[in-house]
Length: 486
Image (cartoon, rainbow, N blue to C red):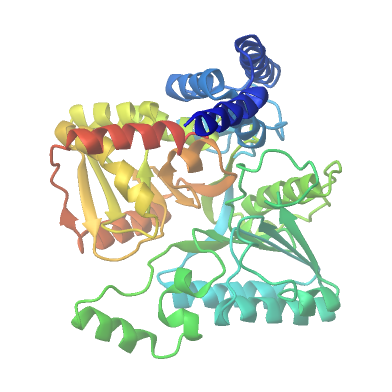
């Protein structure tokens, strides 16, 4: 017994030698909190109270674990593209146009716009853009699939690069994880360029790894823009599009008849005009930020023949903007709505500000309806969304639970404002990710999107809130505080 006790004491002494003393631990805690304060103040980081409390408690209680996480993932803003400025005269008298322009973004302009009713139309429009380019093709996407559609995109881009068109592809670091080294070999061999935005495992100091580029658009000659929620993979164009669109109508009919959900439902559109010019400038900035150089946008010749189109405005959102542009626009829209605020989104995890705005809109008698998948491809988001849904349902917000995966992102307010792009109604998309959307001001596009949202919502069932158990309530709160606000 004495020998065993002696060995136990020796083991404890060995571990105690490596454990910090209370004084050393206090010094580490103070250093961690000082790092948080200095980076927050010097970078003018604005965080919600719950996020700030979560970081401070983590740094105080577990500084050895939380401080490295904070250094890697804790920054929410980088150097903005443009400074805020006073509103200039806009082509239309609309509060949203004035607000967006006050963020230092381009004013609305007239464009020739085509909405894509399904994945087949979206794919055909993308092929037309690639084939129609004469000088430049720029692709920004979160994911390029290692499937039939993804490989077809690379093949078509390689053909255009071989014909002398300058081709550039900007892929997010997370989206690049599933691709092998040879995925872009043919494109690079043809003269195309590929860049990865913030690679997750790169040793280069490219900034916080939690800032993902979720923008999804294609550009031809800086004047033709294809944009929406679709990544360049088969499922984002519908089940049939993953197999190059064969038997599209029959496949959907067979799956619906068999009680199974069809392929993913998504939204996109293409346009020609000055909105594409604004998107081209944003791409230049994103591309140059990866290569660590100052942006030098190339000159673009105006196209006067689109002067009779619909009014639209490019809306980038993310850490490179001086304000949380999309978040601010949606909150303002909730307070200004008089008749309706309808939306479709794959994920619904709003922050406190947006949730309060939606609740108060419903209290005022505004029709607030949100269509979301009953089961999305992110089960964690499905789990935590119910906290906000319970609160909003009590105030009169209507949720339609769709029987299929809808990856579309669109919002319509009253009859004079609509938004479509890559922006989800969740904390990460609105406050952390790099996103892109287009705001529409004319009835043609607004009515089209409203009809699309309402028709999609009609396939779902009403959401009925249920009282959560104590364990679920605590789990939701912890996940919302820690996971979704890094």
